[in-house]
Amino acid sequence: MAKKGMTPARKRKLNHQLSHLESRGLVRVSQLEPEIEYLFRHALVQDAVYETLLKSDRKKLHRRVADTLESLYPDRLDELAGLLAHHLAAAGENARAYGYYLRAADRASSAYAHEETIQHIEAALRLPGLTIPIETRLPLLERIGNAHNSLGHVLQAIATFQLAVGQWDNVGTGNAATTIHWLAKVVSCAANAGWHLSDEPHAEVLTASLPNRDRLIALLDSTEGETPSREIVQGYVALAEDASVRDKPPDVAQAERRARRAVEIAERLDDPLALISSLSVLNNLYGLQGLFRERYEVALRQMALLQSPSLSDPRARLEPLIDAATSAMYIGDFRQTLTYAQEYGRLARQLEEVGKLRVALELQTYALFRLDRWDEVLPSLDETLALGKQYAHERLSLPCFTIAVAAAVHFLRGEADAGASRRDEAYQIMTGRDNNEARWDRVQHM
Amino acid sequence: MCLPLAAEGEFALVRQHMEAAIPLLGGWNVPSGDHDIYGLIVDSASRSYDADILRQYLPLAEEAAARGGHLFYQALAARGWGVYARLTGALDESEARLRQALERFAEMDMPWQQARTQMELALTLMDSGNASAARDLLQSALPAFESLRAAPDAARARDLLETL
View 1 (cartoon, each protein chain N blue to C red):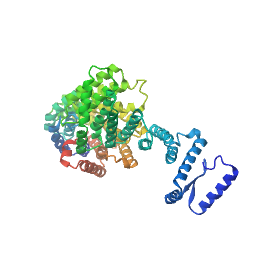
View 2: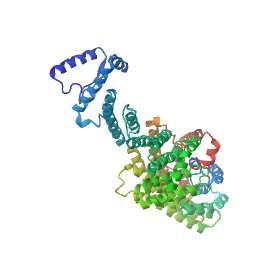
View 3: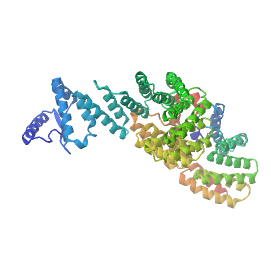
View 4: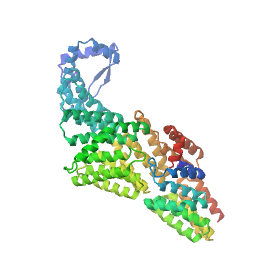
């Protein structure tokens, strides 16, 4: 990059200087094509050189790098957005840096790179001296919270949504729909945190979300008779989710009333996305009550809604697919379970939703086992284990159920040693994870 | 854990675990329905030819499977009734129930379940004195077991064929 657009004399001089640094072992060529690039051999050398620069010179250099990148590569600005944002921020050009951070975040989001999305947006929000209006700030916080949620970082997601509630309250516009939206985000995230947390921390999260829940109920009561909106649907969905997990045993009747209210409003709105999420919570409630045929009917309705042309976001397909796969499993239709689970898995992989991919593989393995496709069960387990290694930093729980299914295949084939080994492995994971053997002995019966 | 236990032949343990789970039915932390519990008990009892357990649990398993519309467990219950009928000497009833189960497993594309049911039907037909039909069924089940590498079932099918 540095040499592009230089006069021949300047290029010669730079080549000489770089060769000198290279011969002294301070820098090395990192790539030759498409353009030659040099890197410091050691980060400490880079830091030391950087520290010798006056702050004002550093800023000038950062600005020059950014300006040069912009002028040399006008058609690659999205790709270079993160780098440009870094140099502009270091140059104190915060308004320009802000734009590039968001551009980098958009690029990361489109590739479902959730960690990067969070980093870029947080960096943008941290830039000093910028006044970011609340209408812009809140959607950015929502993107951070959603990205945390996708990564299974539920505590960070809830904290982000609560921050948004606080910021919105401070503005004090009195717009109930927006308040309902943010309260619903907190309540829903807390209710669903049980997928990622064990019982005790989940109970703490639910307790912490209680004021938000009570405020949401009061707000929704106050909207009775008003024009329906997607936010009101979202509010009732969150309350239904909350009622289905808050108490033990859950208040299923209350949860179902709220879910039905959400469905009814979504139908009036003729909003397929809102209707899918309302039906999804109803689907889960039917499952809790053992109404498996009814549950499957709801799942089929969700799947039919996916044909709506207004649903272009692939993310919208996730919930109906997993609901359909699970519902089919509970009525013993394992061919449909497999079809939906595989499609869910493909989508989860594309969207980098690692936890969901793990669930897809578990369902797929069980369906394969039930369909007597034993040759495919063991590779499915291998795929699940490989996923755990690939995403070791996500700390996916060990697939004890999938390992138990593989053990069953070994036993059915008369491979007693391999079966016993896998069976013991599954048992250890199961009891170790729960730290209470007696409970697992009773409950984990499949 | 009952899937590997059942596959291993630890049928008493399967029943013990499942019976321990029955009082938890309807509890907030039991994700599946009673059809899972009764289905597994009945299938284990079918494989261990335990008529007492079958008599006790088959009505419950059949009702739960029908209530939930669970195709697989309905087929397991039909096979369970077929085995129970043979154990109690009702051979016509046994044949009818096993043929019903066989049809259901075939519809669901489950080769091992089909082959297992064929083997049970062969046993019923052997008791009825219809060795030729029993042989046909076993000769159909054996390659299915072999193709799945279900060694213990394949060995049993071969042993039965030798007795005919």
